[in-house]
Image: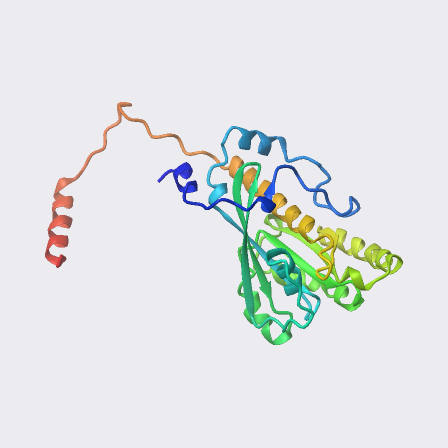
Length: 266
């Protein structure tokens, strides 16, 4: 089955998950890239339908951080548009899959919600491997959770290649702080984000402030990174028919194989 044929089996993406241009970063003081547009190679590849298998891939997003910083609420606000103040602590891991259409190409995020409790760390760590994106979450109203951000990233990177992972540092519960308090915490968080080589965001799962923009930014960055890597991969030479090469078949071995299979059949 060709890639184009396989795409025909993928149901359409909802209209609120369509991305046509690179979403803006939260602050240029700490962002992965300040380019307001997709990379030129990515735009050209999408226009010429040279996206390979990217449209069939699922990008793994791992969400880590202290207990009760709002990881699950962050995910639920985007995926289900719900907020539960009394949501129970995550046991082990959970995940959601969100589908997008980016520059006309289907693309999916598999978002892994990991437990922040110490007793579940070993279980959660088993799911860090293979992440393309790591979200390190902290509570803007709890400065101690920001202090732990580097260690959470270090734990996640034990299972991944740092050069192959996009990192985001996100402060939650923005609604609990005044504008002045938020600015002071953000100033410290941006410094840490730079040290972590991460892009910084502040959001509120309760009000929904910044949630959609944040996840759209993640999806767009992951898509661009994935497609650029696909375009850089050396392409195998196309198979030729009638080019003068011959394939020699050893029928004696083939007959032995056929006879053995016939004896086993039924």
